[in-house]
Length: 420
Ligand code: AMP
Image (cartoon, rainbow, N blue to C red; front, side):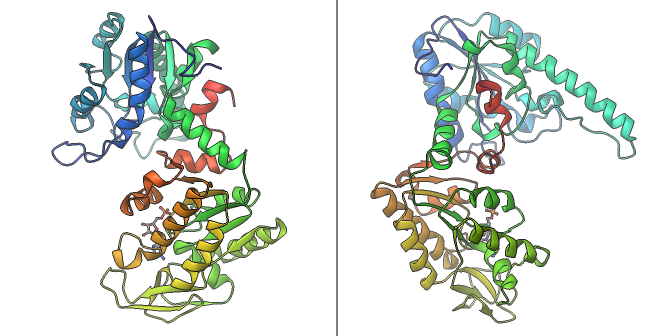
């Protein structure tokens, strides 16, 4: 398989699928350019080799052509970060894109307009009336699938080599993330640096695991984390369950959870996960105490109570100090650590202690040689809030893609290039 380091882009035209789906404020200023920065090493290597670049991305979730979601908004920043002029094609499939990509010279860069202005990118029909029949739905789906193939073919025709550096969309079988790869032979499709780093980090954790392996699963609901927890229960030595999920487990075990977030229809599931942990010799660790509040607010009155004795009118908002110690001991004795999801409502400073304590324990373990992978939306916000992102071994840029990867699912964007 080709890699960024062994592929020489001299004289090649590279179509690079990136994830430039950055947040914008109401004046269309970029509020966080992390995703653009993350793709720069790949883009720079191609230019430095003497290749030319055609960059494709989506931005937001447009329902069609919509100036709000134009990649024009980010063009200046891309140019600034790349340190070179970047040309723009205002329709990724238009005549302009065809002509501009055809005339690109080595070292030149072209950014295409939002790929998702076309429904064909996602391969899903848009704007179907509510009363369409199943047959009409199926026909519309078939049409858009055919259009998706055509779109992939046209995008591929702009270039001589395909590079996928969009880990954030690797779990989508879109025209530019997966289907396009069929139009390049084995030696002309490869992962960008970011994508490769993400794959390496997850495989280091899940496949080439150095033990003990501890996963910390936080966040709000068990229901959104079932598949991950089930997969991890076949891999980890320790599974720390924290965050809002805690209270579903506590309730299932007969505790009193007051007004805490709790999924009553998932009590049996919680018990079966506890049993599965036992069967697999996994140490499933729950909080023993928690910080409770009398309202869902940073200004709530706060008490620390045993996790299974939460009075009515109060809700569990974070783990307590005893639990912080208990979790930290396990984390610090680990050699591989995966962290997804905060231990509490970390957005409120008064309930961010637990997440900070877990973060700091991971920092200490990492300093002692453990490999730590942090990922999935809110955990990244967490490490940024506590200013410890650079002390983790790897902070993933992927949300849904990372979670599906950890669940053990095949990701179309990855499979399209390496075959599995
Ligand atoms: P997720 O997207 O599932 O990882 O959930 C992250 C969210 O879970 C964050 O916004 C947290 O505020 C929230 N969360 C964590 N612990 C709790 C809790 N005890 N009660 C309510 N929400 C929580």
